[in-house]
Length: 196
Image (cartoon, rainbow, N blue to C red; front, top):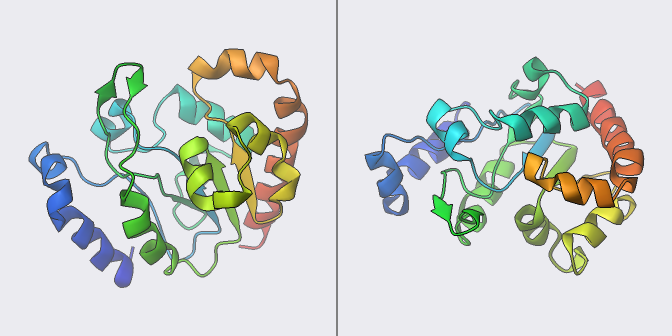
């Protein structure tokens, strides 16, 4: 990161709203570069990712990279992928899994960061939080309907279900996802990376 991106990162770390994370020794977990071609927006880091300081460093990340059709090296190259979750800190555990990202976080920081990424041509929205925020009224009534309608958002955007192993039932019930959405996703990724 250079210039304004470094300044924004420093502001995020110094923000009183994130003081609790600083006390835990956590840094904001996202990865960006001015040259990024693809913006990947997910929910928030999981505990393993936060503690390892590496986004998508778990089984979900392995599955996601398979769907994208990219190597680990490509995925973690900030000149190719900007990894920009809806919150940059692990939100903690709730009654039924991780807590959701803070509602005001993305609205405060994402526009400023995205303004520094002039080369981006594709946005991948992983999960309902990212889809509701970025698609707004264009999102369908459910995540399933939004993902099924992926062609409406191409070529700039691809909505995805979360690649968590816990979503195996959803994937089993929706075979069209692997048959139709994943190939379209890979084609969009290949096209975006070919422009580098």
